[in-house]
Amino acid sequence: MKKFACRLWVLLSSTLGFACGGAENTAPVLSNLVVTSSVTRGVQSNGSVDLMDPDGLDGIVLLLAFRGPSMIDLEVPVQGASSEMTAASVQLPFALSPAAGSGTYALSVQAKDSEGAVSNTVEATFDAD
Image (cartoon, rainbow, N blue to C red; front, side, top):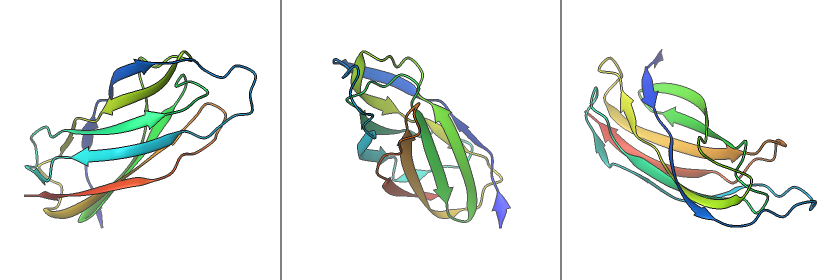
């Protein structure tokens, strides 16, 4: 199977909250993964995922897995997050290389906090032409 190039920027639109200082570490929770249902290779597409961690969002990375005619795994830091923030809607603009295979893709996302706790997995599919 061939690999494909993927450009990805993670933007953060946040909801402020308070971290639970001194408490045992809790794994992040993801929900509401949404991606554009039809993607044109070489053109930017959009997605978003809701992220929550009562311990704060500082140091969280998103683990992205694109599976389909072409495959790639990415680890992307959530930029602009802080320990005071406990929830955010993370924007996921991405682009498939024109050389990527056309067909149906599944995007799986997990979040990993700075202490190594890993969230649930959310998944969405899209078609690339």
